[in-house]
Length: 316
Image (tube, rainbow, N blue to C red):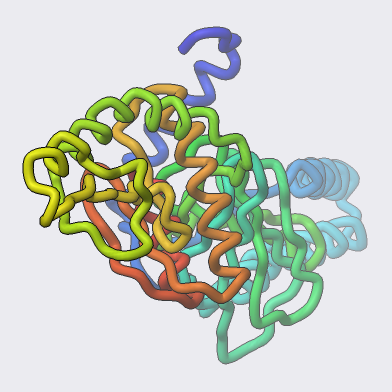
């Protein structure tokens, strides 16, 4: 853990222990409803001061045998205990579901939409991803909540646990829950028009391409360039002229997006350029395909095809 303070290391260790406990208590699921075993309740800082006030009133009332002070003490204690039930009721029964996998580009925010449903109203709910600072406040009953994640590296990742907290109604008790949804989110390469890595790969394979083109011959047809004529063959057999067969590389075909067999930073640059090409082809309405060293996706078009291609780039 380089460049981490002692406090950060201790917090990471603490969260690892908590995560193992939560994974046993609530494994990731497509749909999660908050029930008793998933809700934790403890007094807030204001609640602990409230307890101290009750204790002082009780000591004062018993010391001076003042029934009015004791009555006030019992009234405040009743309010304090009733708030436990209200805090639990406000959290229980809430169902969370993420129907679609979220997706975004590296270095930008990925918006995750969480669907909320319940048979009753819930108030003063705060939601955020664990170990992420941005918090969404649901001050009134809502059907969805939008949470943001920032992906710095391309790939496919599981959603972090969603932390739901509430101090309803008087802030004396804090109820919270950690919810794990079985839904991944995708981080695509950031689009970039720089094709330097692709040009380098094309230069490295140009000699092999020329050799392949010279080995394949085809009969001469009207309109063929005389620059591809095999003059030695023509001198031997003037009646049957032949030309070198021209093989156009996939990179020269506008309907194909090709990712060369690269590694390291060159691969990342090539993936960013391929992402830019895919977005441009989809925007133009053309059919396009994707060729990577591992697989080939046939030509098609539409949002689903674009999503499939971008996912393959994320996994390269």
